[in-house]
Length: 411
Image 1 (spheres, rainbow, N blue to C red):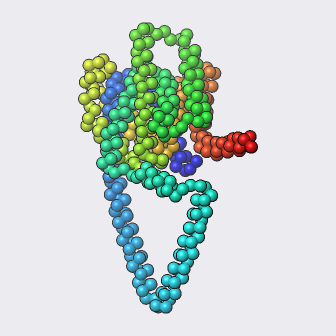
Image 2: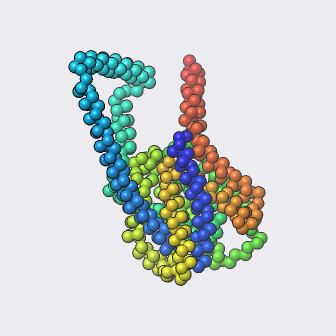
Image 3: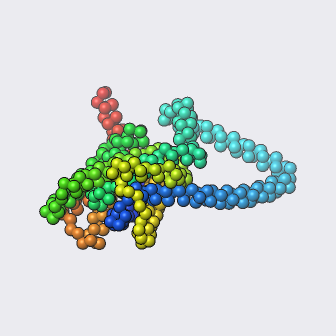
């Protein structure tokens, strides 16, 4: 587990805390300004501000590199002058020694390479093909390609964010976070389908532990509140639509995270994340504003109006800045620095964090089943992060022991 992976985990945990707080604020906003589309559109459009930030950063880097390049040239010129001023005999002697030393090193490297190839049994042609494929996957996308990628996956991210806000408008924060936590199973299936991950024992245990925890929190929450709330048929339909939007948000979030990891590379080295999310925000600002009309015609959204108070506008802007502009970018870094499955299971941590927040702020009480379910959710996240420690080492040792066992039995 490298330092980049650890930073990704820190990003995910930070985003989870921000998401829980932002969800509470968003649901409070809906009491005065009931427009999920407007909040989603504004929050994602703010991502366009990453474009000027990225281009200013590139200009500063080019300027710094240009300065250091001039300094390097001066150093090279000084070294060449000192070499030219040295005696001829010393140059010839030093050159002969350098040639002989280089030849010895080259011979040793050739012997080592031949010995390693014979020992491992790997043909040279296949190694060269693997190197070519590795270079293809490690190629950094150009600005034009990043813009095209943002145009392609931007609508998926917008749909995920809108469904989350629509769910918060129709149901509770607890129900939304619980159902959104099912993104782990969607992410695993999509990752396997796209060839980015494989189904192994560790992944299955982590996902099923998280899903079991989610199921226990659903049962514990229903059991704890069944006698204290009376619901009408209209409220049940409204809550059902909220649950549907939460599940759809989980599905699209899993799809977006897998696609992001696929194009970004192992540690995000193929894509400039600031430019990517900047283009996603720009395309949302320019091309998705018209969706408010069909959503209003279908009765999903109310008729669009602007907030009627400066306080509401300030709360909306602050929540969009923290809950979308900052947290979305940090979450994307967490996805590409870890894995989509770890990020999806990390989103499940909203359940225990929301539980602690409700207990501290609202003074709510939870059943033992709900608390045990929250522990299982956290356990699933921990197991997923331990997969890199157990799968490569113990898995290979287990396969080698099986191979030796079958060889002994055959003889």
